[in-house]
Image (tube, rainbow, N blue to C red; front, side):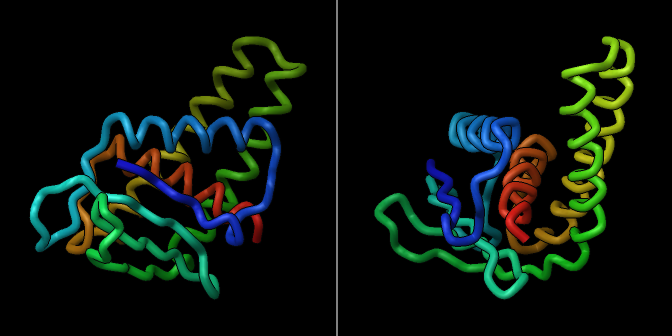
Length: 150
């Protein structure tokens, strides 16, 4: 029912990244498949942060009672986040100066890297939090936003 990013884990970034972050949070709140394993179906609040180079998923009930906290190493995501950052830079630059076909080609690559990162995130959450691909894609966008500071 809500997603909160730890403000101390992120820094202000480009307008494009800020927009992607806001859209991902909105989309997650509107539609998601997010279920902590071993807990009854309910509405949850997700607090996302990065602490000591670890990704922290703190899940609370709607009245902010703790449900579970999962701490994941960012190491398996580090290379894909770096690749995604590079391709996003190329994409945002292309939007300003490239032809539509060049933009489309870069965007296809960007979506492919994004899907790869989402798949890795789903694998890392397996057995902890059930998510579908659409939810994993939105979460990867937020992981990227959190990772942007470092």
